[in-house]
Length: 119
Image (cartoon, rainbow, N blue to C red; front, side, top):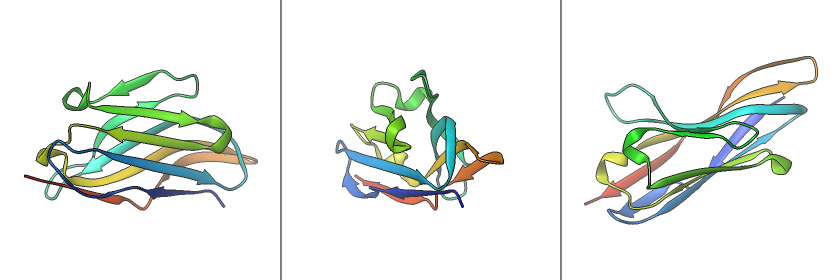
């Protein structure tokens, strides 16, 4: 069984930093795209950043220059370094990955981790 486990959320003051991690485990053959989404109360889930296996990245405009996504293919892990955090970054952050396993593949989500940025 494939699963994604996140860690690293918390409470931080505006201007501070947090680092999120998400590790995939199970009978994994390969992972193509890995990404981070977030959902604030009353809002739709939105893509924050994504990275493909070769390293090409994509960012939501409002986080460019502040957030950095990276992955360790050997560890099946994706990271999100968040700097210069703003109150509007407050949300539940979800890890996402399209995983190919022996016998199939699919889209997987982590359990979510709360990020709260105070004024």
